[in-house]
Image (tube, rainbow, N blue to C red; front, side, top):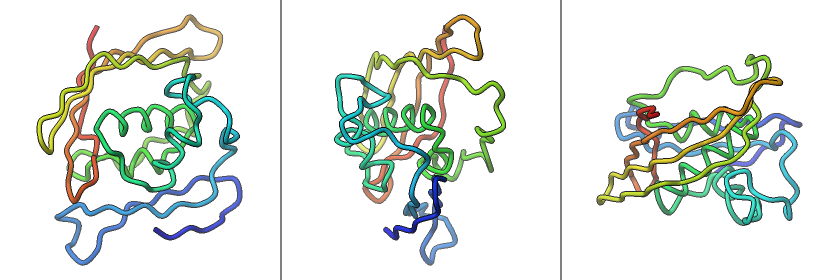
Length: 165
């Protein structure tokens, strides 16, 4: 992992090594992030956990131990606007070219996450969760999703999600 300082922007760039991207051995290049929560601040994915001990190491390039940990780190990345991390942790076979989070006006405010189920099955897993958010001054909304993940080269990746009720 290579660390560079680029001011207040986060930059996570998935790179491949000598295989043309076929093996999807992504590594993260991390740059100093947007204003991150202080070390003692609660993590966006669970306010009973400290960000520094929860999602921050994953945002800095450490591999997630489980698909649930990756899903939690991706929720936190949405809450913090870390688009490059979201793209880097998305499997190359389903990853969009961009998310354009910075262009969302008004930007959603993420209010909380509840993990309903984590079903590991070897190098595949499913995680079902409900994320609550608010856009502008509107009412709180919920996103209920069943996400699929795959582990390659000891690193978990988000494949796709099915939106539920």
